Image (cartoon, rainbow, N blue to C red):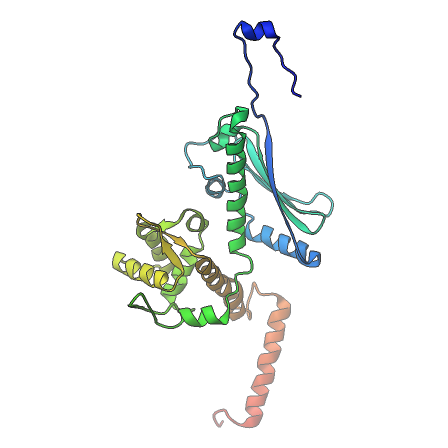
Length: 303
């Protein structure tokens, strides 16, 4: 039992006391089926989310608005105590720690050192509300991180969005990989803020225009929102003019962007720096040998 600081006489005299929360930790642990691959997965997750500690992203994880600068600075660190990799970031007095536990479980620990950081009163009676909001912090962090992992899409989805689509009696254009506008749409939808808070015609339009590098009208944005919706990649929030990404939408946006930026673009420029010297030498060898085959087949122009 918790000791009572006041006697019966004190309480009859009108003195009372209440418990308050000083530090509360809410954690979530996800155990991998295959521990052999757990470390590689976690290290790639850290690499893809190394900027999670930036103010705008931390504010989204904690579902708080960015206002005037706070006295406690935002901070993040990635470190390796021994052989383990840890990733920490802070918001005001509170922090989130993420690491691989015993080499086989992804663990997230959200530690609230001041309940008002997430809009909760400190008295013990508000413990349930605080735990609920801390769990939402863990869930939002996982949602952000999950978007970039395992984003490869199946052939059925890939083929579906590459064809004009009729749904609800409406026909919409295809969303083909490599198309400049489609790629700009995918890159804009990859932004963390859109994955967490949703987006509107106006907020998405500016991002798409920036990636296109040219004018992009409101009517073009409306058309693109319509084809994204009819392809099942976004959903309109009931009673609002905002949209949210569907699970398929997140996968398509991240897959298109990663495939272009991390695979195709580097491969197309693999014959010059900063591509590794070993790769450049190998390509030069392949090019020379292919040239010899063409010469020997006498397919080139006669000298």
